[in-house]
Length: 221
Image (cartoon, rainbow, N blue to C red; front, side, top):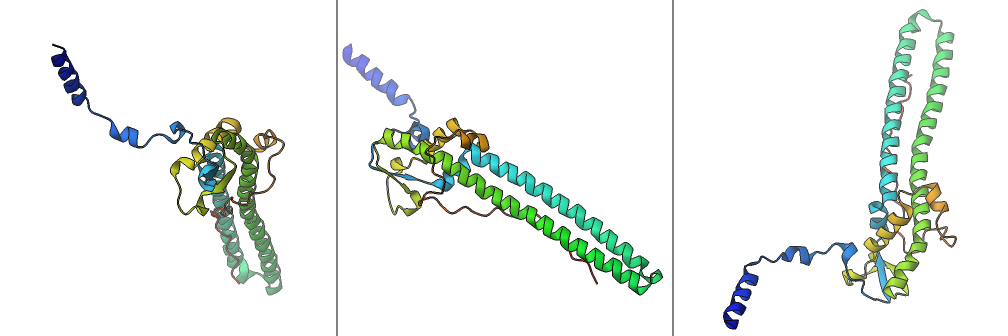
């Protein structure tokens, strides 16, 4: 009887499907924390995947779209104004037309410079947000180092080959989101006092934000 029960138990276990896929690719947050003296970190993936980075991306996309729409409205208005001046030219003294045309050109140049400065300001804002994020996130690495018994964190791009378990991008990302949230000035000011003011040596260079603004066309002579 005992052998028959044992055989039945074995048969039932064999009939249960095993979710091999779920076991093969565990969620990064659920990985076992393997002690290692050296850890790796992907700063780009950390920032882009964080609540802070997502908020900055959404804000900049909105601002860029608004600037592009503003440039389009300005360009349409200037084209209409230029056309109206051209239509009035036959009835105007040459000196009067030249004076208005010169004034128009000066105004177009000023408007173009102002709009281009707005686009550059968006690029500066993106870099400032990234620098503030890094300054606020660096001190949180101390907890990861302590948890892993590590003494150093290297840029993942500098590693030729290494175990995936020593990458702490997801681990630090969870701490960053829980501590800093979507970020901003207040989050940066609430970061630990020893936050690094500059990008650490192993952090990637900030990528410029694509400019979505169309330049204002110059006036035709």
